[in-house]
Length: 273
Image (cartoon, rainbow, N blue to C red; front, side, top):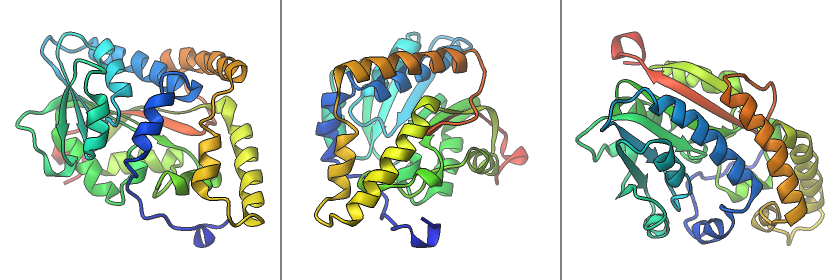
């Protein structure tokens, strides 16, 4: 489907999804594999920090990744920020992180952070450039941004509609946008490579079937991807764990359904205004 023909979502997020997510995040192979990768990369970044450094997750949702960031860095403070109170209620008690309700573009903090994480959040935000600039301004000098986003517009489907995505990213596109916002990209790779052919086929097939079944909503189709089939779930977790080891060693993958990036803040004179 061409971009001009693609249904345009409004962006944003449906906070009723939080209750569904909290029930599957700890078991579903996708969330478990993403968390392993985030943990390994965050540990490497945080190993350079002096005690007392500050870590922030923007769009922390139910607190699933906050626990990982707390494990990766135990010598300082970890803060979770979320726009929706529904998510913060569920995040409470899942980690030692401090929790704040707010929008990153309004900068409610009086301190800068040494590491900011934003995991599968940027694609929900229509004000993409303003958000990246706000993240840069919240970082300490030489601070790092780590983020994940969904990859490839060719994978656009009912899933993105149901999730209220605004866009999916090509690797070069994400790199360019980070550079334009005043970052130096230190690491960028696709991941979930082993899922790419399956996801492409399943979403295309279900999308075509949906055209003949008007009563089937995007949300109903998306929910099927979160169903946990024990044997398959364990097998995919094992396969993706090999990707985590590969990427944690600083190597890259040429294909995937997601992208992960680590970028360093540059002084304003060297980057964006």
